Length: 183
Length: 285
Image 1 (cartoon, rainbow over the protein chains, first blue to last red):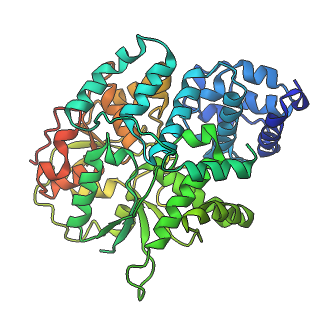
Image 2 (cartoon, each protein chain N blue to C red):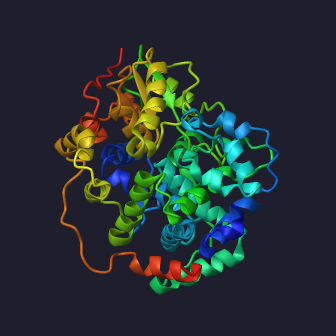
């Protein structure tokens, strides 16, 4: 799938990633350094090659880029000094905007996280997790997090709060940025 | 010791309260004043770069602008450095600083956004991680008051990722050692291991538990010869402390909690009862 086949609003982002990895020499240092590589079906090195050869169909058929935990080993070690972790972040953004469905949970979690920040300025962990569980539409989902939630409540580290209403603490900031980005 | 502008970040006001409590107690004991930045907001964590990097930059810039606003309590003196205990916050603020310094057009754009709140950012302040401040601004060899030396305690120093990478500031990201001197000054021994700079899985522990917990398991198993792990990141601490059931259980303390214990600071002033590992019972020899 060439870049020009992507929806128009995605093309600029893909071109940005392509520019970020243009001088990749395919040495594989990124893949060898990635702590999550063994959970990936295609490696980071392969991902960059797919970006450069316009094989976005292959790239986005995989969820490898969603495995990136932003540890910056690849960025630190890249002999060409490429900002690979940032490029991976851009791929996550593109994946989320294409609604590919191969990274539903992280897309949902990150989106709700930012909604939470927009509303309150700071993260309200209880509400974030509550909305995350609702968003997953899986009644069993909260169960695996319940023991942790209970110990955090017992320690008084989290407290339930009523959801806020109104435009939100950082609504103007978010709006101004999105306006500048043309979103 | 110097005074610092203090950016605690969301975790330190919620699930990592004990980090906030112990940073404050330790820095006060070391004679430093912490000036919490007024009206600070979230740095964007790892979420912003996965959703909208523009928002991420704006969140970092807003906090830098607020810091700049109250960075000179004494106009006669140099502006204060920003002290950040959370590694993700540190990286986000530092990245915003770096990007805005490098790219004038970006800075103008952001300042336009910030002007609605009468804020603007010039990027002249230093953003420093707690570990940077502790390792470079404190002379650990010089008569610090360690009234309760933790002799016989072996410590696995765990640095995590984002305080070391991608910005190389105060330590070697391939083989970090900045905590060694402090741990030894506290009377304890340093475990010789190579997991100190490995990743804890970060938010994968929440969204892809199998991936996150695999990394946590590797770290915990490698620390089995240590009495405790000492760390400087709320996400690392939470991940390592929470997923202990499938690996070798080890108490995970924040560095200021550990150093505070050795200095004889009371346990409640270090928030030790808030750690999830119930068995944080390190006593001096």
